[in-house]
Every structure is written in C-alpha cells, then in structure tokens.
Length: 510
Image (cartoon, rainbow, N blue to C red; front, side, top):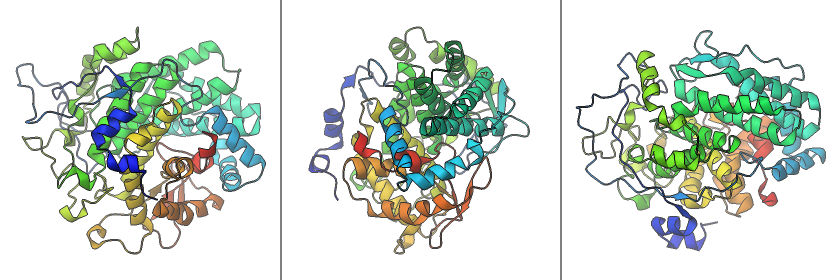
C-alpha cells in the first residue's frame, strides 16, 4: 500500500509544518570541540590522539552553506507514565494475549521466561562507580561493562516478567538490580558513550515499568536511581558527536531518561538530534543526486534553552568537565563528522563508499558498512519514534517515507532473491531484532503494506521463537536457510529486547 496521498503530495517542509506544533527553539552553529578519533568503518572511538578542545585562537569551522533549521514539536506539559517503549494499556494487551495462548506472544513469552535473564534466582553483578568498555561493543577486561549490560537486560526482562505473571519475586529482582547500579557515576573506555547509551536506554525502560506498576520500590531508591541516570549519562550524551547507529542510540537514551526523570530538556535534545539526523542517514531520491549534507551536528539547542525547559537541571553546563575527562582518558567523538571536505559536502566517507547506483529510496549511510549496523541504527531510531508516540508526538509521520523505504530495502537485502547487483558486496552480518516496532506502527496501526518487512519477520525472526537462546551478553541463534546473514542476534541485542513480545501487534490498543 503506498503512502497516504497527503504524504505524497506535500513537500517535506510542508509535512513538518503540518505535523508539528513548534516550540521556540532556534538553530545554532557550533564549532567542533573534540578530537578526531573515529571513522565510520569502526565502532571504536578510542585513540591515542589528544582529545582536548581546539585552542581558543583557532578559527571556528564554518560550513559554506546554511544548515537546515530544526524545529521541535511542543514538549508535553506532563509525561505519560509508563510511557517509554510501552504504555500500561499495551502491556495489558500483551498480558492478555499470553494468557489466551495466542501466537506469536505465547512462544515469545516462553522464550523469555526460559532465558538466563528471567531466572527467579537472578543475582546482580558487582556494581561499579566507574565502568570501562572495550571496543566494538566488547567489555574491557574486568571493566564492569559486561556485568552492567547483563544486569540492564535482566532488569528489563524481570520487569516484563513481573507485569505478565504477577509474581512479585520478579519485581523484587528488577528493583534489586536497579538499586544495585545506583552508584554508577562514570563511563570510560573504548566505547565510552556508545556502551553508556545502550545501558542507559535499557535501564530506564526497566525502571519506568517498575516505578509505575509496583509500589514496592521505595521513593528514596527511585530518587537515587534517577540521580544516577542524570549524573552518569546525561553529561556525556549532551552535545555528543556521533555517527549512524551510535547517534541514534544516544537519542534513544536521552529520550528514555527524559521520560523517566521527567526531564523535558533531555527528552527535547534527544528528539532534536533525531529530527536533524534521520534525513542525513536515510536517502530518498527526492533529495537529489546527492544525499542531504551531514550538517546535523552543526545545529543544536543552546544550553540556556535546554535549562529553561528543565529549571534547576545542571547537566547541560558540564561541557568543559567532560572535555577534560575525554582528554585525560583519551576518549573521543566520531571524527567522521568533521573529516569531511572543506566545503562540508556529503563526502562518500559518511556513506561508506556507496556507489552512485546504490542511491535508491531507503539507502542508509551504513548500508555499505554492513546490514547489522543498519539494524542497530534503525532499532534505536524506531525506539525514539515509539517513545515520542507514547508522549503524543508523531515522529513516525514526520519521516514516514524514509522509514518505510528503509524497512523495505533493508529487509529485501536480507531475503529477496532479486537483489540488484550493486548491492552484492553489502555484508550480511548478524540480524538484530529491529523491525517489529516499525512494522507494528506502519502496518498494524496505519494499515500500510510492507511485504518485504513482513517476509523478513516471517522467514527470519518468527522461526527463532522456538529456538533455545545461547549465551548471555549476546544471544546467537542460527539463521534460517536462505537469509543473508551468518546468524541472528536474538532476541536481545544492544538496544532492543523481546521486541516480538512487546511490539508484534500493539496497534489496536492505540
């Protein structure tokens, strides 16, 4: 089914104007104040290069064009709770489907129930005040990231088990994990802000469920956990430069924390980044022969504008402190953002060398990196849209064409036998669970036909529901024959978990 006529006929600018109630944010240029440390070919931002800010007498880098103005929807006066990835009504909907023994919820629930993360005797790992990550998603030797990642997924899993079974032991387990990590204050190491983004989003999702479905979590404990999210994560996410899946993971984490902490500034900054970056990450032929310039990092709300949204909050004023930490620990941002041509043109580096013939509707800046990173990016991207949806903001409509074209192209590259030759060199790599929420919105809520996305769900994801999960940090499940991937990371990836269970068809409840 094609896009609704209004979305086809209106220009993107008119779509934005019609869809959004505008908040008075102005666009701002910012000079680059971080070291050149990463490239889009690697998920490792660590480097031996100096991560200090540029000297004051260095002229600020200015583009030869005017960056796109970014306008935000009106932030809700009060957040809806629970309202991160699911509302209370959606959770009750899923609970009813499990009780009725309906598929795919029945199999998805049984798989979760039998997993490592749902053990009734789950014991949290040793908490750390400082954790250090390794590279490419790995934990540094005894750095604490692996234990924190396991516990974050377990907290979310135990929270869901509590809601779906009513067994208070799951609630006690979830809260014990959250309280355990309330001492966390610092994220360092090779993937310092990326690992932090994965952790923060998952921790906040678990905490949101527990805070609003169980009265056994004490107010002082909730306050301590909320303070941890603000101290350990928001300062390093603020104004972070990042590429692709990394950038959307930061967006997701900020929006999730924003909802749980009732922090409009965190929510707004995450959403601002999303609105700015989506057109730079997913290409449409209507953009022209070249993609939209990657100018997303040149526009941002000012610290003063953010502070006005959340009076009393100070996390947005700690830039110099964070830059000092970056320098001392040799941390950095994603240098792909400012190793572009002098005229700030598109640059094939940002698109991983995608050939001209590959620029079709739905191409991602990471498609020619590998499909697994596309999955990671879209998982975080669509989670942001889902969070906003639950707060009465329709980001899905704002970029409906880009998101649906991405879903169909990326899914087709996995399962379609008629893949165009220009895409033959695209690497399959493991499938992340990433399509259920997007398919749920566009197909179940809006009635749009997405045949290749449905085929990927039916051929690659749903058959995994009856398979045993192996591993803890990553859960590898052998792929079905005919799918372009070595295996499936199922059903808990870096920034999504149990997506079939929670989002396979929650459309009718909206």
